[in-house]
Structure formats: C-alpha cells, structure tokens
Image (cartoon, rainbow, N blue to C red):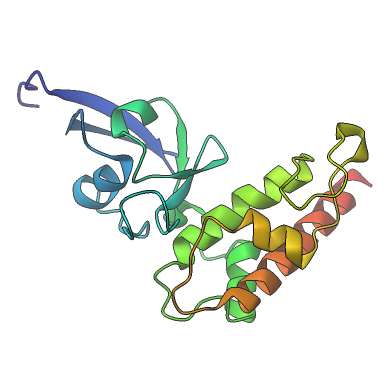
Amino acid sequence: MTPVPPTYSAITLNINGEKYTLPVDHRTTLLDALREHLDLTGTKKGCDQGQCGACTLLIDGRRAVSCLQLAVAAEGREITTIEGVAEGEQLHPVQQAFLDLDGYQCGYCTPGQICSALGMIEEHAAGWPSAVTDDVRPEAGPPPLSADEIRERMSGNLCRCGAYVSIVQAVAQAAGAQTAEAEEAAA
C-alpha cells in the first residue's frame, strides 16, 4: 500500500460480512466509497442530500442514508447493502415480496426501499412508534402494521414511478412472513 496523504485515512469497512481496507479522503461519503472504490453499485445515488432515500442501507441493523454518512465514520460498523440482503440464491422475504407484488417499476429506488423496509420491520417489531401510532406507550407493544403505519415509516424513500401501493403491499406481506417465522421459532 502506498503512503496515505494527511487528508486521507486507510479504513476497514465491514460490508455484507466481508472486510474491505481502502484509503479514502476524509470527505468521502459512504455512498461514494461503496460505488466508486468498491464497485458495490446496488446502492443508488439520487439526490445526494439525504432527501430521497435511494441510497438507504443498514448500519448496525438501522437505516441510514449513505450519502450523508462519511466513510471514515462507518469504520468498525456492520454495513449491509442490497448486495448482502439475499442468502446466496435465496431472496430475502422482502425482496421476494417486491418481486411478487411489483413493488418496483424502473427499479432505481428499489434497493433503498428494500433496505429501508428491512430496518422498518425491525423497528416496528421492537415497538418503536411512528408519527401515526395511536398508543405510543412502551407497554402497548408494536401497533398493528397498517397501511398508514407502513406509509409513514417508509416516507423517507421516494419512488418517482409511483409504485407506492405495491411497495406498501410488499412490505406488509414481508412483515407478515417474518412475524410468522418468528412465532414458529418461538413455539
């Protein structure tokens, strides 16, 4: 490895279970590090201002817009991009639901939508309320995952094609499948 200039750092990123070491300028966003340095192009660049959600991925299991996250700040964290969602050839239930219910049109926002849905389903299962949750008391538990709940929780992800109805249906189907699997495992 060549010497690292003072405005650069050599960092190691843990992405989809693999470690990648690379020199990056301190101002490099995680999105640019993924796309330009590591050829992980599934995460899309949309607005580059954190407003459209096209670049959504998971950091330590939580949703993050990678265009606002510096790559150096992601060192040591578990990063999951769309490339790491499936188990080999087996699609994740969220991916399968998007396919089954046409939760995409042009497909540009789909990686961010899927990563956001994964994080949203976990947030819901943990009992995190949203702006439309009727009873926000912790003892109330997770609210029913209604279409309004899904729309509110996914509102940070825009779809310029307007596939929102199918996206809501896909998220509901995937969340139901995940809940059923969890109940079977607990029994």
